[in-house]
Length: 232
Image 1 (cartoon, rainbow, N blue to C red):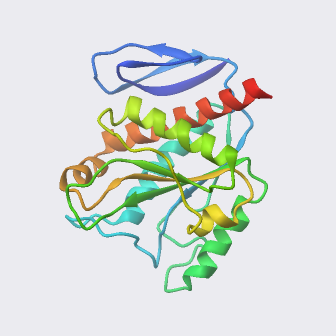
Image 2 (spheres, rainbow, N blue to C red):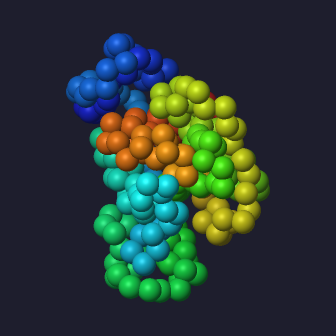
């Protein structure tokens, strides 16, 4: 048996647990077994960091900080379920563990090296756009990776169900992102929301919403493994 601490909100984790509440975000310990991610090696990549702040929020939030906060929460959920998690960073540093200006290409190459030997890679980011009305989480994958697409679809579906029911976005392929193009394992970039949208930036700065997003990503990963295990 694995004991896992999870947030409660209305909904059910199909195939694993059923949780009912009245949209109150809380935590409890529940028992579950046979989790599909046990012993899986999952690379969690908080985008940017150190010398690279990422996209600036409309009210001053730094993308790199939000990426790390959500990633650490995701790590905790995954580890509680028995996964082996490798973080590309756990502090406000670049992946070499040093502050200061470095070449962006070197940073990305080091992230790729950390992904070697993993089963999947999930890179956490925040989005931006010229129009402040644009919002909503969206997942990107390499068009050459069918498993990457399946992972992206599973996470996008979970985010819509458990974090952002009004989200109408669909997954999108992209070969311009180095981490997607160069990584051999199934990999996705999770753009958790738009920092250029005032309401969404406020949500993303909320620990409660960060927890909900991290939980949704976790559920998507579990759903992905359940799907591919059935097809094995």
